[in-house]
Structures are given as C-alpha cells and as structure tokens.
Image (cartoon, rainbow, N blue to C red; front, side, top):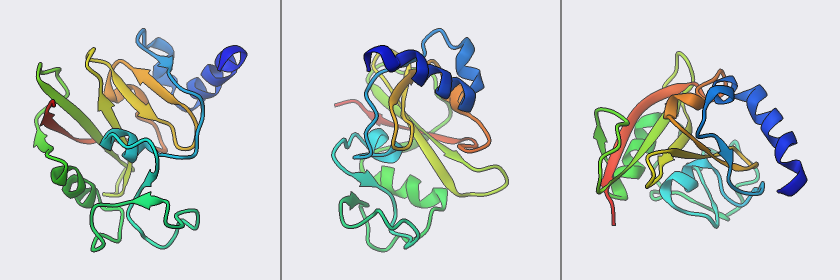
Length: 160
C-alpha cells in the first residue's frame, strides 16, 4: 500500500463519510478482486461469494455459494447461507467474548443484500470494499451509505 494509503483514504472517505470521524478506521490490505465482502465475512479469501443470479458475468466458476437453489439477492438467502456456517440472528452488534458477529446490509426500500461486515477479535469491524481494499472500522454503521444501504441484521457464531 505504502504511498497510496492517503489516496485510498481520500477515496474511501468520499464513499463513506462517517469514516472520517472513525478513530478505528484504517486500510488493512491491498486491493484485490479475488474475494468480495460476503466471502470476507464468511472467512473466505480465495474466491468471490455471491448467489448465481446470472447478472454477474465475472462469476465464471471461481465463486462460491453454499446452495445451488439460491438464485437471488434477497437478504434472507444471505441469512440462510450464514446459518449454514453456524451463525444465528442476534439482537445487536455489542461485542460478546467467545462470539464472532457479522452485519448484513440492504439497499434502502428493498430486501436486496448489498454488503456484509465481520467483527474482529478486538471489537472493531472489518469490511472488504468490492474489488478494492479491506478496511477496519469502529462500528457496522460507519459504512452505511446510499450504495451499501443500512444494517439489516446482525448474526453471531460461537468463536472457534
């Protein structure tokens, strides 16, 4: 990342204005198109994770979804996918020792899932920004915007 960190921060702050005030914000990886936010939250770093809706031509077999039956982006399908990994819905994003939490986001006035963030062991959160960088942020709400929408629900899993 090196010299580009300030440029990356400027771009991220334009897309996510709440991060400007986030004392926990930092860029934590180089950009990569190999995995996306859903895969990152699912703890996969070597392939894209998205339901095969037929609209993403770059999903040419180097992607993952835990079921062949799920073919749309309704947030309920993402909830089901995380349940297959052992997550269950929970009330909030408050840190709980021994658990890992995720947040799922939806576009305003829809049930289309747009993003997932994962809690870190330090109580901060991490997100993969599309084909770009991974970031750390203090709260799930810090990355709410017009594109990602708002947090729809939280899920947790016993930490292994």
